[in-house]
Length: 450
Image 1 (cartoon, one colour):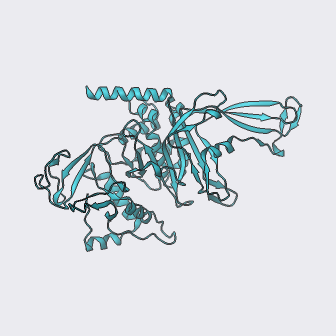
Image 2 (cartoon, rainbow, N blue to C red):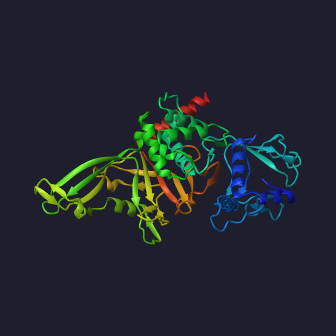
């Protein structure tokens, strides 16, 4: 798609807008477009610079420059022999790729549908050189969420949950949900997975979240992990499907003097892994997990009354993974609090995308293989950051997509592992849930074909 440059008067009007106003206008267009199935190819390089511009906080220091009219020069290549222009291969651009209908869009007006398999020439198809064409897309699961005012943390967490197979399969079916939060969440997922939806404004859902968890009332910036835990707690009151997130840790106290051991078992819905506060070039997810599970001595203010010694003794505490869930969520603890300040740790954590093997961490030796399917990202510093999400279209095209509030675009798998990663969502491979999901998907395909 060739996008013409703005006229001088249009550019002048646009440059006079505040970044926040421009961001709002684009968000509303993405949500309320009269042609919600229309998509354009836009250079990801240009789009990234525009995102920096519209996310510049008022009074927050030096503002990022406005990038100017859309510049697609880096994603367009010209055939040296025929002079034809086309999208350059392996270049990053914002474009929805599946199930697209191509339509004549001369003079920005909808014309006839074009057959992509036709051998007709441009003249025979009624097209002229460098004219616009329109891609009409019918896709499910590629809808964005409107930012209602500092709600990017909520949008990021919801997109990760919306692409959790057992969650969306359960809530998209004809279940009767008694709780207000569960009803609102089910309706939101239905809208997100509806065909032809560009972006959804989650206003009703936000009111139900505020009612269930009053700490999120208003339009203040919050933490996507805190929202995730609150949402899973609220949904658990109405549905057992949340059990797919629940695992179990064994906590052991060992007295070095006599060897006495006491074990307790605690449930978890996510594992919060510590990151080194000192500058570190790169660490691995498994090294963070080893640190989390490592044995450590309890302090003198936390002595243990040893049943064998009949006296208070200093003990060592050790954690073990006792039961792993079907859906495993890791929180990389990037935010460190102290008495006087809040600090963000930007260390790069290398984590596997296709194969995370946790078998050695489980005492019974069962096979525990996981694959990544979603990531909640946090870019920027404290108070000025922005949450986005990566999610994989499982059992569809198996491609990754970037969810930035209302805007959705394809992303290469090589970009998923970054220093912005905050929450990692893994699903167990070869599990009962995965088998059941495949059966449900196959049944749905049979229903559609009949």
